Image (tube, rainbow over all chains, first blue to last red; front, side, top):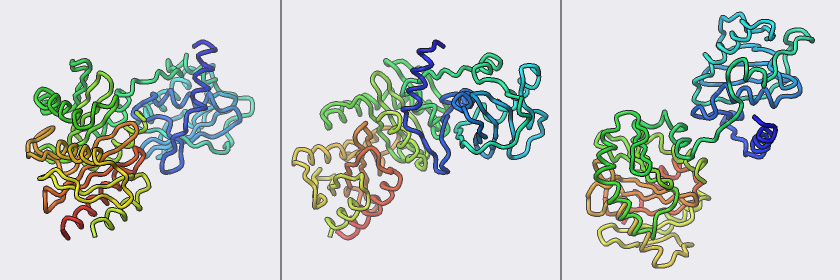
Length: 257
Length: 120
């Protein structure tokens, strides 16, 4: 990553509105966007004064100690986990320890759908001279990038709501680009109903908006709901449970407004 | 009074900007909230949109059956359309800002519509 790119990314991150969840923790990864380990390394890279960083995903809390943009080590894991690397300062002189730290973070947070962080006062950890490894160094040792490539809006919408959607049919320029779940019913909708609806609706609202989410509660015989998201040349059809409506709406607003 | 119910709902949700109670069989807006400044054409368009989304003719729009609640979200606006449980032609058309708490609003709007429809 060039210095200019790094600087641009840093400025973009600093100017972006923080996403704070209901517990007051800062949301740093949703739907693996960015990848949880990327998000963790970015937090380490932003930590100059010594701090404990408590990462929470699901019921798991991983507390690390970072200072001088370096990861010193993993201080604790809750619920308790039997791993020798916990409580140890990582060092380039101990490649097995570096790998163990990566394996543990990957195991606990690597597939997290939501990852939050709290910055806390530092805890006593290791000896004064043990500085750990820089976030930049860890990108090489762990093969994890700190670069965040923004996902296109529709892909971000799909990944953010991956657990809320029962099935997905994603179409771009008239061609299916991805599917999830039992999408046969969505394929039938795409073939027989979408065009008719879009024409009828566009006539009512004097043209179609560039980005639009249309939801129909309980539209399937099994009681599940249907939605169609439109953005430029993309159409996404999904089935979802009605109780997910609010979450889907708020994520759409976050991404497209 | 229908208008009082609409005004109360509008007052409760800051992001709600206009409410209209309509009859799908005649495709006419019957009552709006008291502060509504929507022009006749806008009201007609809103009612026509409700007729398409809630399927005035009973034909499924998307999927298997007509919905009792449909919504359209654009970058600037959320429009919600609800059908009364007891009287399928009674519908509530709602124009809101996109930042509205959609879940909470839909729950309250549904209850509001059922009270209006039941007391007609």
